[in-house]
Image 1: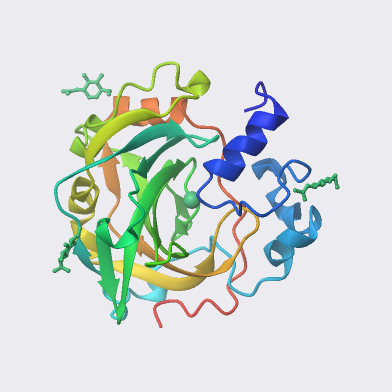
Image 2: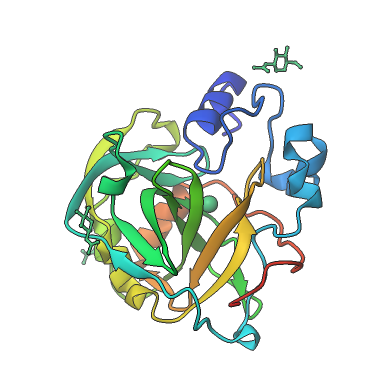
Length: 258
Ligand SMILES: *[C@@H]1O[C@H](CO)[C@@H](O)[C@H](O)[C@H]1NC(C)=O
Ligand SMILES: *[C@@H]1O[C@H](CO)[C@@H](O)[C@H](O)[C@H]1NC(C)=O
Ligand SMILES: *[C@@H]1O[C@H](CO)[C@@H](O)[C@H](O)[C@H]1NC(C)=O
Ligand SMILES: [Zn+2]
């Protein structure tokens, strides 16, 4: 990250960061995770990072209970084409888009259906649970039929005893820091859902993007089950990642599990 030019950072954050607003003046407003407490002061566009009432991430615990509301039902089928790339802070994947979001894998909750745009990984995890922070966290970003971000599925990642078949689908991450090309990859994305028993237990809350401009109106679903990877797989993920967890936000109007 530090070695590449500001122009590239701007291009990456504008084009690839799933949590980045392309309208924001990223050329002059470079933000860094090391200073996430101060994002709201970098630009008027990032004001919500400081003043928002539903900012993410937050600390969760079993003291919150688990959600009985907004239960997600998934329609993720088959092998999906997309590009594997480095979003600037770690591994990421964007689904090939033919102009019709409704053709993407989707999930439904309440009366809403949202469509998968792609995933990316933060290290360490954004959300802590019971004070425990996983080594990494994967976000499946979903949009509505018009392409507006509406919900994120959060998978907490930790090393376990076996390789995870989801990550076995990825090309090697050797030289990933320098990888600027998108690498065409086919993935069965439902393998991630398998790893966390299709969100049979989860927390949900009203939150925001976890990077500037910190837009709100995002419904978060955080799986209770940890998604375990092999030790070597976790080392590959961490080796390909740069510190990318936002400082935890105060719980305010998040309506956890409501
Ligand atoms: C970004 O900000 C710089 C400096 O304030 C300004 O010169 C430039 O025109 C801005 N670009 C856009 C696209 O707003
Ligand atoms: C599942 O999604 C596909 C598009 O990927 C769609 O054609 C199909 O109708 C959906 N099935 C249900 C039950 O919604
Ligand atoms: C598990 O994954 C690691 C890292 O990707 C790989 O080096 C190793 O060969 C895999 N082990 C098995 C048993 O497939
Ligand atoms: Zn994210």
